Length: 362
Ligand code: TRP
Image 1 (cartoon, rainbow, N blue to C red):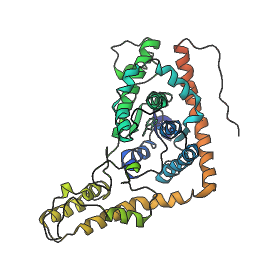
Image 2: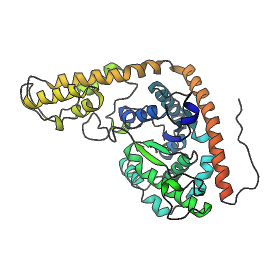
Image 3: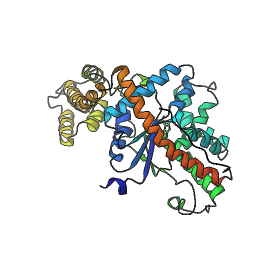
Image 4: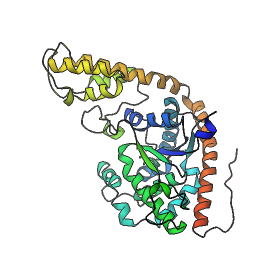
């Protein structure tokens, strides 16, 4: 009933398939997507090309990771009847727009992108990364703008990319569509621009700490709780966390330096329960660290149980085939939007010579 009217504004976000999703992805971004798919026309991009920036020689692994990440999305509740799942490498308009945008952004501006810099450090890429590595940041502008979205729900670490994307959109609209350089961001389309200036939407938790209690939760740092972990694995991982201090149940403690409590804040739904535990912890009122951990284990497992159940429906090669059907349909639909965008961009760039059509074989 409300669908056709309210569902006009588009939302685009994506993930690079690097392995199974973890709790950091869930609270940083997935949760937001589930909310947004109720109200917006959502596109979720499988940025599989980006996976080749650091793993070009592991193509089979990237293919499987791409399928696994869709299983995670579906298990979390991404609904392919509502949202559109798009495969980047079968959306040629993205690659073409990347070239156009690469001409509009200074090389040094790309290299100053703080998210790229952090990644080069964190992954120890030194100066051996391929040309395609910084190029992916330009490609991400195209990932987004191909869908001319209003919102881009992402984790905090992606804000620098969204900012670059906004700069590219403004520049395109100014250079090719005659939009005034003083136009407000909201007015770019009404002033004749092809691209709206999209806004980042940051998740409830910008940065989830890992089970090491120190660094951001991340697969490569070995401190992650995966959405597909078994209840036993969850218990083991949380059980092994260092509570930031050494104390007895009847000794006063500081919940603020205990990373188990940051999990409690995020995953235990009833804030009063957490407050009471913190209060007892501060006073040393007969509360052991095991008690706090168990409460967190239960809350995390309560979140993950339905996700595990739905994920089981997509196990094995049959599940893979179901996923491929879903992404083929999504990509077909995604291409309609992306091709339309490309056509508009080409027209603005005096590149409209004739029309073309992208076709999908069954
Ligand atoms: N770079 C993003 C990440 O590492 C994934 C991504 C690719 C993306 N294209 C995107 C996110 C477009 C938002 C919009 O998480």
